[in-house]
Amino acid sequence: MSDAAFPQAWQPTATSDALRLRARLNAEIRSFFAERDVLEVETPILSRAGNTDPNIASFSLQFSGRTDGAPRARWLRTSPEFPMKRLLAAGIGDCYELGRVFRDGEAGTRHNPEFTMLEWYRLGWDHLRLIDETVALAQRALALVGRTALVEKISYRDLYRDALGVDPLRDDDGALRKALGEIEIDPRGLVRDDWLDLLMTHRLQPTFAPDRLLAIHDYPATQSALARIRNDDPPVAERFELYLGPLELANGYHELLDADEQRRRFERDHLLRAERGGPLPPLDEALLSALQAGMPSCAGVALGIDRLLMALLGTDRIADVIAFDFAAS
Image (cartoon, rainbow, N blue to C red; front, side, top):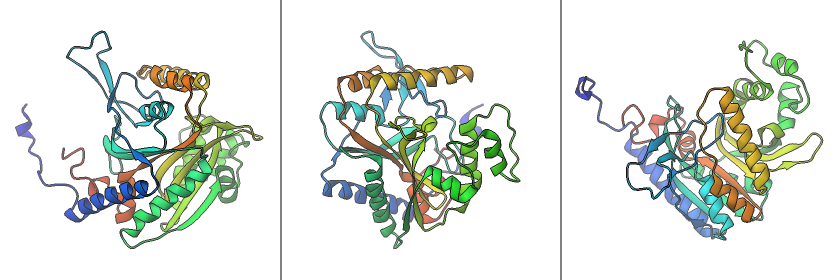
């Protein structure tokens, strides 16, 4: 059956005012980093390696032209992180990228398979210092619509202890399940981090005040992703997330520099993907080589531009802030 059998509306899903706000935000971001002497860069959208994170699905395609022995399979980036880190290892210095990224299977009210991400890196900084700059950028964005927000910083552990009465670093799964209260969840196949995530999404995020920028830092070591692990008792990942109201805006790390540890984390991702029957994207050997050569100590953060625009406009529909959403594209 032809596409003509399914006529589509041709109009944009966002208003002209929303699209103009996006343009103003992009200009404000570039001004913000120009003032701080942070270089704008562009990195490839297609890569021979993919994101191994078991919770992120990547698009892949087959290149039909000449490859000179290189693999034909290419992966659409889920973030610009890996090539940006190669630039850092090559000596580019503080840098940022504002561009499109792609994630398979993420389409709905708050998600679109292609979306806009801002990612930046600061040499010699840790995740706590980067929180302050991320908050400053969010406040600049809020000023575009005549708003401001209170700022609060809290450790992951203190947030759960204060709000739910559980210790997310020490309490067992039973205590975490009990903290969900009347919320019923099928426990089959769930592990400790799943229960922690459910408490965040079902018990904590809905209570976040709409005009508060909340920075949560120092996550469980099991949720380290690409962050360093600090040898506290128990150890914690030097990572933060920034929320405006219930919307997560940004995810940042005091970046891991150890190539061998990074390889081990990639390989653990593959094991979990294999258990779930998912695809196994090739490891990014270029990133691992860059880490082996020596990437400078730094902190980095990724911020969702569409999420930020949703917060600025007070909407929970991503279609309201992009010209054409997945259904209309």
